[in-house]
Image 1 (spheres, rainbow, N blue to C red):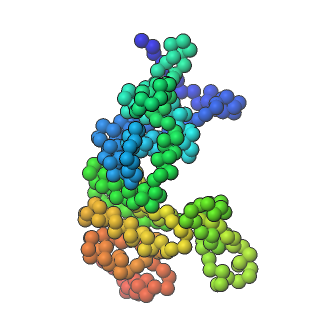
Image 2: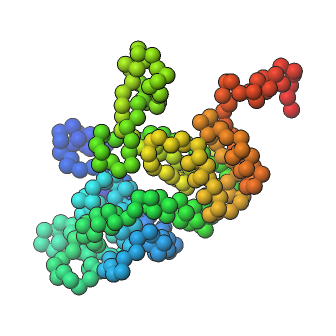
Image 3: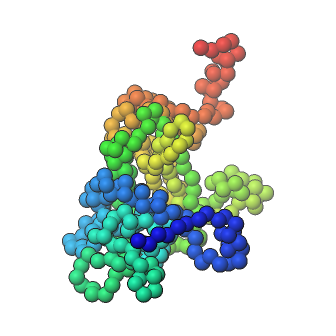
Length: 322
């Protein structure tokens, strides 16, 4: 039996970094990744997700559940390119969790170097596989998947999965938010738009600015990102249960309430009890609908010029409020 012992030596690691003696550093530990994939694999999560994935191929030698698992592993490692897949497989915990049917790590008998052996999923190639599937398969599958269909799939299947496994906090706190995602000024970013922003990255109307104010603004290409997040009072976790990425021009308010409505249709009443929003999402009719039809209370700030704010200030001057 071969025993490998690891010793924590922060000073040695720091010296190695300063001297440039470390070629690669991982952001996800092998142990944590192994536990994560063991959890979702032992509970039969991958295959149901693959069954509903919005890409149906007439024939595929590699199962879609492996694509989903491989893509998750790449994201856990912060890897943006599929070319990094061999490195992620070698240093991560995916193979440890999925077992020998996907691949295994072995020591080379002559060099004592760790190598990867993967049986593959077809008999077309007779060379040794160092990854469960080819990185080109991952790239083509991602390219063939419609971005809009992918977000729709996530917004329905992930909430359904979280509810099935009892992962929603009983207090039912959800947060809605929106922001801009800036990209290089390249027309190849499909669906992006060029808008005028001030120095705080807030969109502005050119017609309402003075010449001095206009000089401090600049045109930027962007998308609009709208998200619906679930968390608990202590902020111990957060789940993205709804997301939208599209043109930066449409107002975020109807987009966010559309995500909320879709989520409620998927999980049913009783899961969402509190919805926390900023003032950009103030909409009396939609808030009343959530309260009346779904039992959801909405928390938000008030604009300084709103009558309801003046009413509240007047009530406070009358004395203690129960």
